[in-house]
Amino acid sequence: MYVRGIRGATTVEENTAELIKAATKDLLQVIVQENSLSLEDIVSAVFTVTPDLNTDFPASSAREIGWDRVPLLCATEIPVSGALALCIRVLLHVNTTLGQSEIKHVYLNNAVGLRKDLAAQ
Image (cartoon, rainbow, N blue to C red; front, side, top):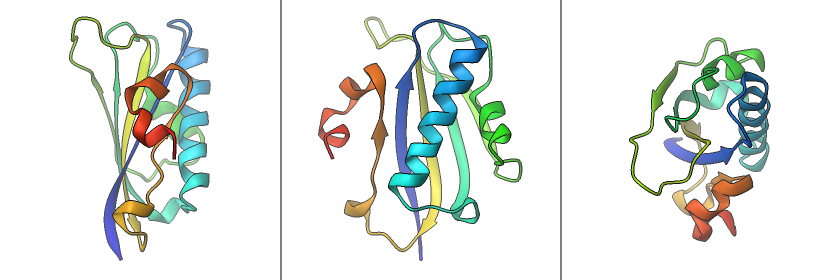
């Protein structure tokens, strides 16, 4: 068994708690499904949001889908000029038997443009 990182990102149309919650839950559920994870496999999660998202914490959405025992952390992404706006990113640490090349990273909505090489998988 290995500890692996799984990346994911998504975007919302505007800065509302409802949209942040829905997008975060969707992103996490797709990552779990695509990588055949159980809740016990998830070691921790680090979320970042772009500075234009400040109406909710993505970690609260994770707790709402049962991740209340998973260590979660939220931070603000650095404000690079021209970077993708309204973006939620996550780095999951998971216990898995999958090899590095078997991990499925998930990019949804406008975040597909962040890593076209990984999103195409």
